[in-house]
Image (cartoon, rainbow, N blue to C red; front, side):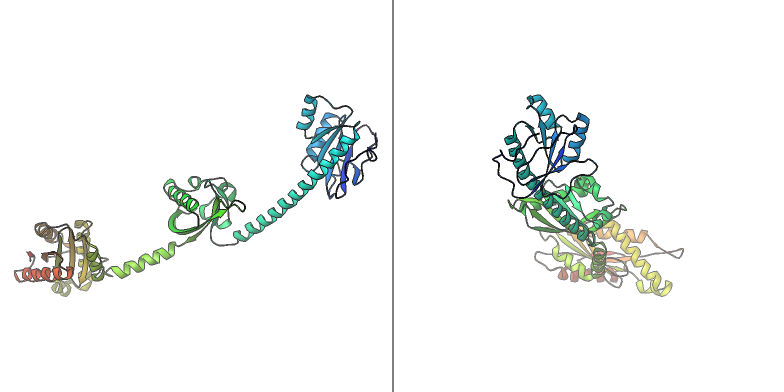
Length: 422
């Protein structure tokens, strides 16, 4: 072979460089410039641990063996193929496509020295890149291990809204492994009607930046729908500062919401009949549209004490529930009713003038009379008396109730089971 050590003007590398060499016909290896250490290349013992790695490969190695060598070293080594004469473009392209980084004539030591210098620089950059990739892989694995141990479902999305990662809790929540979550959109992991909500919220967050907190339904792995609070924040490119995605966590608040609903219901509903209570009635009355006629009915069950005395208080309780179910079927939104206390009920009729209010009250009275209460295989007849009043301009609802109550008193005095208007 040849000695390129003396003739080369290329500066030696900053660090010692390991150079592997393979020649199938037993050729003498070249003498390399200072800073390059030649090692026979052995397929069974890959070179590892060198600061930088370059492979010199004779071009006249059999094609199959050369390709095998290239496939083993091209990812970690800078491959220089030595040729007797620089081949034509087609042959060079074939060698480069096969995995070579450079094709250098063995008769031109200066070119080989320059190729080694280039290889050393590129190998150093590759080594730094590999170390950085390894560090990033460790950081990624540590982060994944950390979030996998958190009980709350956590997920990541890129700027296009595609999932880029999640933790074990998220996998369990939606019933999909992380491998299927990554690369999917919300439409791939959630029902369409819910996915649309998530997509719109995600896009608004990434467009506006900052954080986002809201409650929404999520379909659990079992198919059950649960309520969660989403906590999301945008992520940004470290260099440009541009939004490149988002990170989110989910807090299951299903049981808390149930408890809140129970407490709300307990605060505004009558324990026995589940009708609104007196306090809730006045809250709803305060919210009523006063630009339209507003009427009030005060309803009382006739001879209710006698019913309790004859059939027992249990019968009286179920009779009130029976009455509430009838009112439920006859009064649509925005009309509301409430148990004011005992056997007395308030009914608020929105957009209902005096004549309409009287007619509706009469229908209620007739329906109650025609629908006896079934108790222990007995039909218990019910009768009600109703007073009607319509609010005047700027008149408070409690004042209207007083007038309707006076009308109810007159109905009672007139024989009960009737409707009287103020």
